[in-house]
Length: 78
Image 1 (cartoon, one colour):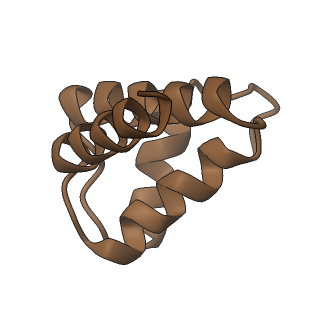
Image 2 (cartoon, rainbow, N blue to C red; image 1 turned 180 degrees about the horizontal axis):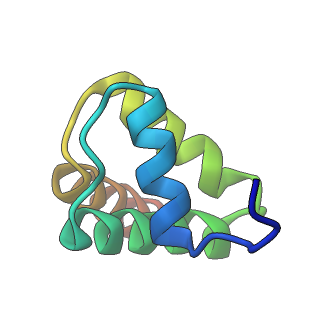
């Protein structure tokens, strides 16, 4: 077994394979990172991974999820 640390992309691809799921596209990754950034900066950092988990439970696309989070945050801060 190699002692080399995998890149984030390699790690995500490996986990996706273990879950028998396709790895997210670069666009999906960008949307999830933006979503996580909004959650982490609008609340406590713990909100980011939990928000991403909720998106998975909701079975919606990262693009749709980002749109919902932006709408939620906009309404919350108006």
